[in-house]
Image 1 (cartoon, rainbow, N blue to C red):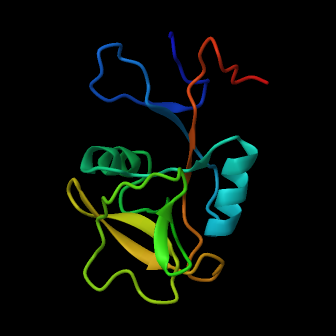
Image 2: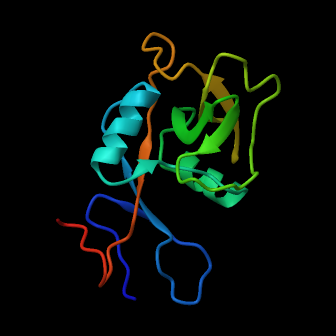
Length: 148
């Protein structure tokens, strides 16, 4: 269907027969608390990027400078973590001792080499939890015009 990402977005290509992007990722210019990141991504008709397997987790880590904290679209609501894209995917990569109760948002961080782990943080804590983030956006195609 001739899918592509707009300028300034990074495509996530998985092994598929057409080589079409599975999503487009726009890295925000500045860090934010999760609720602000979420609002910003929604204004772009997207959501805070999700990671449903180790390949995607590594891809997200590669979008940021080494050892940067970056928000994941994974938030605790009514006692259970849910994905921003409404997926029911069970994949997680929590660091030991995480998630911490009363810290309802998840962020990733490179731990060593190509490895990363997830940690929990407050969703609105501007003192300790202002992190980088990427918005996950739908690729442009003949049925979806990205420039509207």
